[in-house]
Image 1 (cartoon, helix red, strand yellow):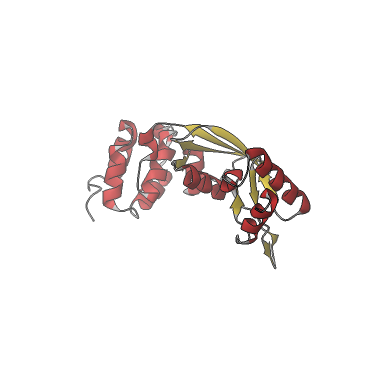
Image 2 (cartoon, rainbow, N blue to C red):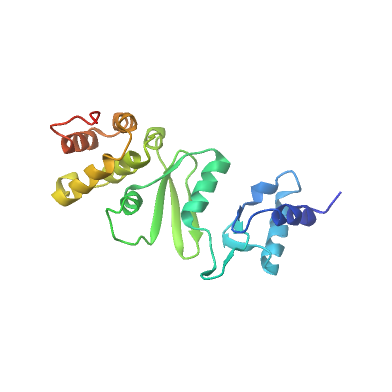
Length: 205
């Protein structure tokens, strides 16, 4: 039987450049300690790179930009996939993704129906904050972000220009998904969005 290190090296050699690697990828090959030791040695040799505690990636080089590092969103997406949990941006993060805020976040906060945790990816702190299943069950790509953003916004302070931007964003959403997501939104957020579309209903298109 091949050594743990050799088996892990063989699997990593078949991965695409930039692929994320977690110790749990190799369960069944050896003990947790042996897997961690193998990954540590490969990182030290440069075969893989360490991104955060317990997270590695295969090097990816661009001819112009040089070495490319996986971003926080890549890591969060992979954690959600591996652990079969849902993870969505928090209010401040959602505002940034929607283009409604120009502030560059020094810390990214996500909501999850999985266990809470903190990650340090390079110099960026990433926090997964436990929340109710309802808040991560919205289906619209745009409406879910808008609702998450508005949940942590002082709605009475939103100016007309921002309201107009939000309305234009929501007009791009599937009306059925918007209606579904509003059913899971807090009452104040539901009322705020419905008022944006008066005298038309959100289901008219």
